Picture 1 (cartoon, rainbow, N blue to C red):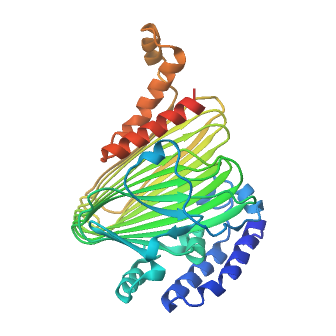
Picture 2: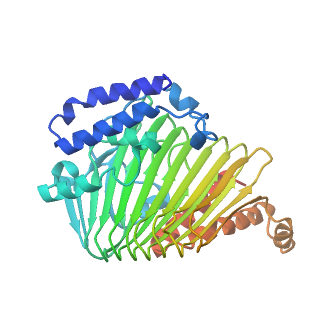
Picture 3: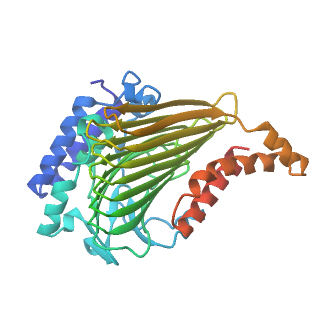
Length: 433
């Protein structure tokens, strides 16, 4: 394990936070210890690690982060389209959830902090927190389990009438700071909910956001997840989402990645119940010297499940993108239907994409496809628009927006779909024309 400024800083954070954890229940202390041990074994990955070979973390490793300061109140109101989501909102400021009294009840969903959980709620969390993925496969998720402040739990017991908005907000700290946020979503059988996550931060100043969200879907449950990453231009964003999909349940996730200097998102799912369905879609837009890395992994463990993936990237100037999508079909997962597509527009000669779609199939009665396409804007389509009097810049933006809009249009909630469409179009107008 290599030594680095960041690694020493994370170790110091863990030591500083130890006294505050003294009163935590034994199961949580043990979970933190397991996360710490897994992180220490793995360390900060380098390009010598296969899963990180296209995403150097040189700047992160060299930075001596300090703990993000504890929030003293709610974050400033969101600017632009994110301020108009108009749904139930819970703020996570510098990694710390803000929830009056430690809990909130809305139609179909009980929200609470682990620190305020009843014994029955503690038992629910103990069975699920950090149990959906291997700590030894995700070093920063392991670090998150050790460092996170106070996990936010959404217990979905019935149909939720409107989306729930989890607003992650980093505040200016003056020096490089790091925060770790943790969310657990448990959907009971046949319950339905829509969860929106947004990530915001200051326009200038280095900071690290380390976020993990886990979904557990009971039989027949349906959860739609939309995440919008619009961090500041000097930020590093590292996050994991993992869904465990039960029998006849349906999980849909849309990942919109627009901000930060370096962003790595792992969107994973385990298909553990027959008849389950999983959709992982995403749009990533980068300019300047941004690096946006999306890794997806869908594990088909049982028969008669479906998965669908559509990721689209738009890369301009000297930006770089990474897409690594893996579908595993195990021996017992007969009748699997899985499709994965990655499409990328390169808008300059200096933009780069590293794409690696993967299928690993051990069953013989399946229907699985995957593919990647990389190219430039269609010159004939540009000529067609120009011939009808549309200026070159406007024609360019229209075509790129239509390319990205194929994913945006698949978002079910109309208000959220409109917000995402505005964000995407703003990103195209400001950085890609």
